[in-house]
Figure 1: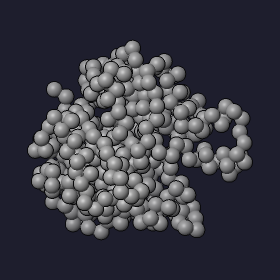
Figure 2 (figure 1 turned 90 degrees about the vertical axis):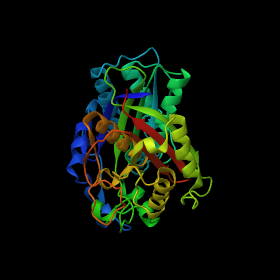
Figure 3 (figure 1 turned 120 degrees about the vertical axis):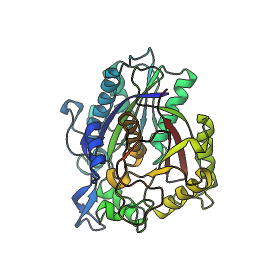
Length: 381
């Protein structure tokens, strides 16, 4: 399966070039917003998607972000020589859906709306709107697997293509949930940080990391077997569950090891062929410990490591989507996007944008509740 088109709406702004330029700048997308903290009385650092998009897509930033990211990916794919097949499917990776609209539904509207306005709250509605806009008639569904949802959607897309369920698949991953109500529980759990600048708080694979900062994004990919100028190939992947705890990572990491090894096996590649480890990199101790163990046990600490959440924020369901977008754009442009190092790092952690030296990329995404996933990316041909 190849990726033929990319679209992105992130905390940096609207469009994939805005994301790319933001990542290469080494500056976080987050800024201070009022109303955070346990008493909603201070400013908090979050990478929210700014206002923008086509107003004809509606008043909801969520709906506009879904529509604009998909439109950009489809237009990009067409420009690169993609022609839709007879059956085009759609997969939408989400966790919570449009939390801003649901909040307004209860708090502002008293849980009453006209039927048409109510229906747009449903997670299936953006899918229907996209299928209608482009006249696609293939399978369509949502995918949710916590913060591994983007990876899981791409794995599912490959399954659909390999199994003949679709000729092409549009994958969209969306999460706009950086409201104070949603951020504070993660802060209380010790996973998220909103009271310090991202590069100071979120330091994956570096000393002194306190956790992740929240981000928002909608990222889209056109996945196909046939395009003139593909970005990169998705060679294989795997997903599993720890079956251990709704929050904590199983301490032996055996299920994560097995998931990564299964992804390599599915892709038909050996660990020594992987040159880049595009980490989940949340900045929590649990995640750092698990992924450091993966690097040592499976890869003998050979690959270069990237972690982009200090820049784009942790975009929950869309987090791996942002990081896959950075990886495939990097294959196209010969650059590996990476956050700057600010403290004592893992020996293989990249320090800012680096020339791409070839080879394969393993992309992990680990979600709360033990949702493990890994995909293998590489150049085409």
